[in-house]
Image (cartoon, rainbow, N blue to C red):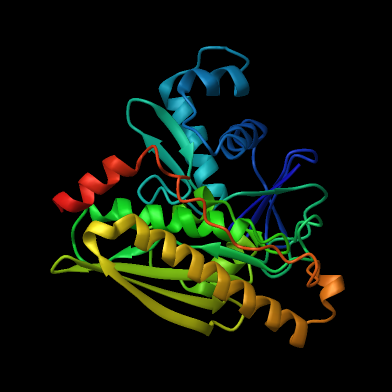
Length: 294
């Protein structure tokens, strides 16, 4: 299995770590520790889990464990101060917080660009990035996260479009990173960015679609609504954005990048966008209260 993150590839079958086209030399225990963290990037890995997986349950000193973790960080350009990829969760353990893509095959990284996944290489790809909260109200962030989730769900219903999982794009929250780098690290051609702003009982959501290879804006718009209609506005934004993106990307690929038949989306196969307004129904009362109190 090949695990891709930033411009690195971790090949657990060959037990190799590459940075771009170059092989990175790591000690066996350091590789095992890194592999455990990357393969379990969806959770915090406890000290006991590391001891079981890397040292077969043997007890090792804190200094030995710490030195291996620091060596793993150095191998991927991280550090204990920065903790950009390997983060210490005090009292719980260690977690790999970078965006990871998994694919089969050997590492073939060219100039820092992740190797495409054969299963999705024929599809246009997009990542919905975390929306910025421009109002300074921390609780409004719940609404921004909900809007991102609704848009991601709507886009995922377009069968010819490959949508990056939200937990991968969410690692960029609060970071000012160029879209070209995001495109390389996530392996996507398009990103959707946006922001949320509140003023005098009204909300405004701004969204923009960007092509990562040239950092070119393809579309931008804003949506206004009342604070008490927060979830109706959320659904309307998701429906509108998904519909516009479907039309724009299909048109772009049909006119500029070959036959739709080879791109995996014909008119017959294009999916209709439907938003299930109850998708987040279980959490909506709580979210509404939080937004209203902000």
